[in-house]
Image 1 (cartoon, rainbow, N blue to C red):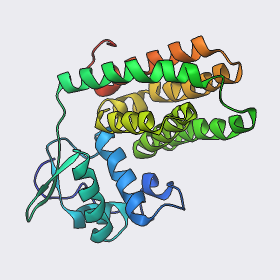
Image 2: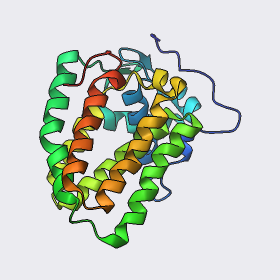
Image 3: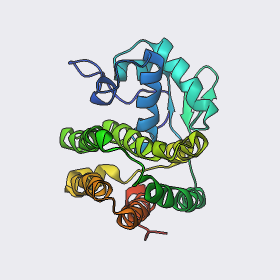
Image 4: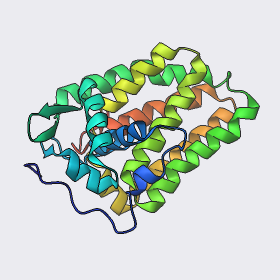
Length: 237
């Protein structure tokens, strides 16, 4: 989609599921920002397309003001570029950029998950299970934006047990710059549901304190992200 036209009329029932499902303690600006970020990553907002704040506000069931504020936040992250008197253009990411992002994530995330496996308190395991289930629930709803958001929350929560907030911030930024344009076909084929269930497999390994198994599963997961999930049909890096 190109031009300033919005991505479609607002659903009669209100905001999209990806926006409704977000945490209640966040400000409206933060909720809209997170939903828009997820829409960029999943490809629901198309790379290279320009969207106006009023059109996006209609789509998400909010006024243009929090959308405009949220998009300015995303501009600082490099996800969108402001277009004077038009709206915001969704930035495009090259195949080389995606390769480089995946390579850095492979260096950071699998070994961190390995190290965190022994550090997570037993009392926290049910909460992590709930976060894993939220990923599965989003797939069951057919909600790609909600899927991206729930996946983001789960993985950053897991990495948070490293105690290194700088590491978590770096991974958050890398995940935000990833594009998963192949998610929609995977959702319709049912393969995304099987992938979502991998998060419970990861929790099984964490609960068993199988650090090596958790590390290897995380490595495969990132390979999937760079491969078919990115829409390029490539093999894992």
